[in-house]
Amino acid sequence: MRGLIEKGRKRFIQFFVVLIGIIIGFTILGVRLWYDRTTPVRVVVGEESKNTSMVNITANIPKHWDDVDGEGNPCVGVQYDFFVENHMKWPLVDWEMLITIPKEAQIDSSWSGQFLMTDNEILYRPDPDRDIYRVKPGNKENFGMVLMSDELMVIKDFLLVGYKDAKITGYISFYVLTTLAVFWVLSLAWYVTMKLRTQKLEKQRVKDQKIIVETMQIIAGFIDAKDEYTTGHSSRVSKYATRLAEKMKLPEEQIKNIGYIAMMHDCGKMGVRDNVLNKPGKLTDEEMEIMRTHTILGGKVLQSVTAIEGMLEGALYHHERYDGTGYPEGLKGDQIPLFARIICVADSFDAMNGDRVYRKHLDMGEIIRELEDNMGKQFDPEIAGHMVDMLRSGEIQ
Ligand SMILES: [Fe+2]
Image 1 (spheres, rainbow, N blue to C red):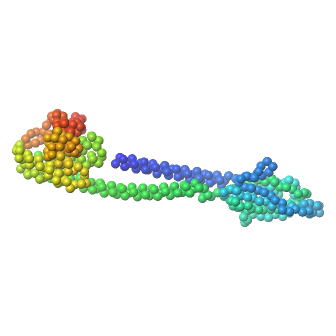
Image 2: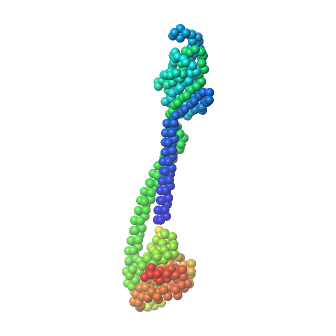
């Protein structure tokens, strides 16, 4: 259970870390978008500077002619065509351009925008209803004017200021983050679904287990009721065997199983005649043989139980002795299944700790002495050692 909780916590941290990563990613992307949209594109072209890789500006003079101004003075008429070429990945918007003219001049005519002249500068703003208002990536747009001046001028000083029309869908990281976010949501949905299903199964398992335990307790009640001298024996042996398994640090599943197995260890007594089972005095050899059959009977009854591993062995071998002098098969040492060795110690302790018709219970000192004297004889020394430790510390009384 602790492992499951730990696993759940790890998974939660993983989901949380990925979510934080996605949020940070989108935040960085948002800042980048804001920066790209609000940082002006500033292109200066003149003697000291050149065209940039963002926007290219050129001016052509397709024709010029001799003319006269309004007062009849001779002058030169020049047509200037300007080209703005967008090399950025975003459209160029909200832009205007300051054109520096070398000498005084008058605008005779113009197209594709508004031209505002001040001293030796012309401020150009594109018409909103023309393509030049929003120069798309890779496009080259054109505007122009005719200037009347004293002589032919070459215009080559420009200052363009505009903005990039950046969109979030224009960044590769947007698709990466969106894919990641979709995967995150799907994973979370899958995880929650699995978690709910597992919880449902776990609830059912707990319910089933409760039914098993209650059924076993009823059967153990019958077993103990048949033997009038050992009321509650099966439940107590189950409790002691569980404590021993915990002390031995067996896996959680085995600790749980040993409790069930120990509860059923004497179920074969149901098949032993009452006059033998409840005989007040010492049993004859023949009666002792009958009594001993409860291990084999128990094994037969429990052989069909497959849900709990070791059920049969617990009943069949709990009277085997570590030195090989027990019954029914005379198994020795590690040949005796571990659960049966644990039950043997728990069973013997409960027998010594309870009153019998032919004797009173032993006191704790005598029980400890018996356990120690029989280490390696009746009992597995390690298991008996754990029992002695628990009796000395008062864990079991
Ligand atoms: Fe027994």
